[in-house]
Length: 148
Image (cartoon, rainbow, N blue to C red):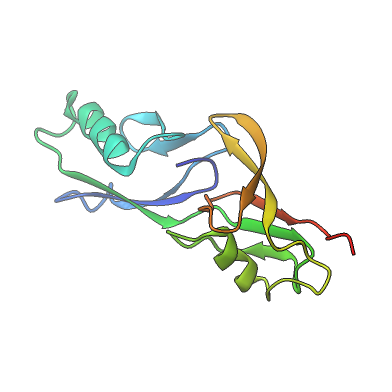
């Protein structure tokens, strides 16, 4: 999980705590009773366990917490595609799926590999990958022009 992800957090039996929360730019969510909780880089199960542990500290006797990603950060597809732009991320998406979502390659596209820019644990990474590689939420995909 990372900033701008929208999370659906359910504390079973506690309707007033169950809601949708957005991860802020610093990587935290603001959760009632316990305050800021770090979400960046955590799994859904890891975040649920941390919230439950904080709620156990004098707030709720035995909390049962569930975390689901409601909406992931969008991906961006640029360069030699039919319709460059921002698109919704879908779990399991590959580079090829993302390009298809953007209308497919243009006639001038280099179709063998693409450049991806990805933020991982606060660090920006750039790399050239085959179109079969998986996409992550927040990725920027750039399709280069081929040389004739």
